[in-house]
Length: 121
Image 1 (spheres, rainbow, N blue to C red):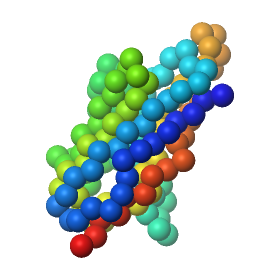
Image 2: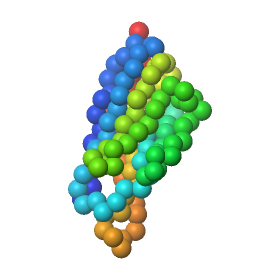
Image 3: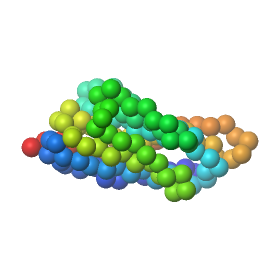
């Protein structure tokens, strides 16, 4: 069993900051890419940022220069530092990890339960 547990969401004013965390636990041999996605009401889930095992990063254009993704491989944890938040950043944020449970098994994508981020004055 593999679990991704997110934390750090909440209500923040425009221009403020939040830091999301996501810890993976359970039967894990290795984790490849990790990332954050978000889904706003009435919209499709979209990629926010991803990070590889060697810390190569990729960001959606809408968050470049404001959000920073990082990871701690020893803790199987990925972070998302969100700065200069805007109302349009309001969404449920989901953590994703590409996981191999055992050495010779195939990788699969695991998802967290989501954490609400609301940017409003």
